[in-house]
Image 1 (cartoon, helix red, strand yellow):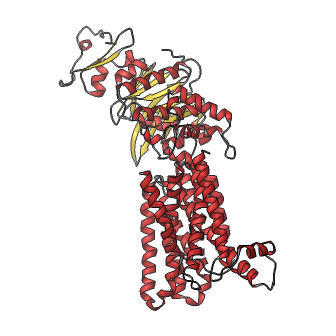
Image 2 (tube, chains in turn red, yellow; image 1 turned 60 degrees about the vertical axis):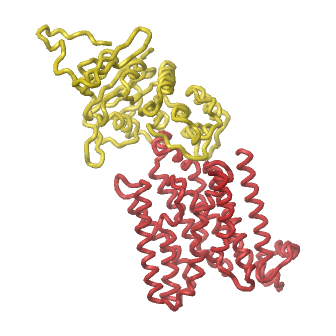
Length: 331
Length: 285
């Protein structure tokens, strides 16, 4: 791997490490790094009567891990879709996952608030249902698997779920405020509860993403060349879209609607690394996305402590200036 | 120019039919291709040239007919096995931003690299050989998005050669090139055939086809209508019948070819051999 790309990866990894330490140290209470290092060796043991241990073990480690998983999942989902569809505007929104997950969450938050604990599962379920609807239209028949049909099917299916969400908000206007955090993107303090439910989906999507790196590089040279090399473009696109749907639906279940990450992070790493090779873009997107979301979440927790703010706007504030700076240099 | 057409054909196509969107584009096409042979497929727009070579390459599904690669029916070959029989160089290559030439050529090696194996020294050496054979070694570290049309076509040829298949199929590789880049590509393709590769070339330029090809397959209205050496196949009558022009192909002993076209005249309604003598005139080539 060329020096420039190695440098980008190392920078992203160091940023992620620093963000991890900040995330463990900062919140409504500041914990000294020395105290954190003291309790890290005994993490996982039960009934330790030490408040620092309880904060780190019960709250901050699960939240930090969740932010890393969500940031990596959304960024990799965006990298897969942008590569598979050869479209720089592709993100998890394009395959209906975001609209479906939004509807799934709103259904419970607004219409069945007694079942609020099931919001992540509902978001995951409807996110995957929406993606399945898009794929069933986009890959049906002999001419299926084309980029245009997938994008149009995604827009149409998203419109259905967005309409459903709007109707729910119109029907229960007094409860909309409870859904603001989900729409803006947030990481709740719910320990390992959500992560333990949705991690298998993210894990399968992640493994698929690794296996898709070489096929996506073949696809970058065009469908004809990919076929000449023994690849099947329609199958690669479907596999990439399924992997992205699993990753994005798992992320939405954990952190609400954070569409920005999936769109922008792959572009940031491409511009910084000077290559579109998926061997670099996929792992670098994972690390950079995790670092960006974790930093933003630490700000969101800290800036109005003890009140938690939604992480979505902070992520935009941190990520967009970097993106615009790179864009100006590159084009 | 050499054409070792003995032995089993590397590619044998017979009775090929292709439907696209319910419309039959190709009605009946036959073709054979041997090692060391450069075969040019010519014909007017819409004749089915690209459709035929795409179907033969496994890129478009045929509705009927037989395609055999080294004797094995196409339908019995997996896409990975097929990649070791032929390489396809498309008419309009994709130009991804942020991919260097050597990265693209290494992607061309992928049929030889297992899913869980990294490219090794032999793959890097094969990629360098492919770049040299395509006359593109000087472009190795350039980005694809910075190449001219002629340079890009040489790189696409290198990607195809890196595949190390015995047959190279090029779909109108010179259609967007200037005169010099076209001549460079023609020399490369001829040299590859002389080195033993079988080259299948779809081309519009009949003078170019006559100069480089061992054999020409003429297509019209979705059918193959002639197959043979250029100087036997591309005579004045056929140019008038198929392309509807009054034109003659000329060739001299040094290999120069030219298509002399009477641009503003209708094609002749009759030819000298139609006269009472009954003896056909010799071809103009």
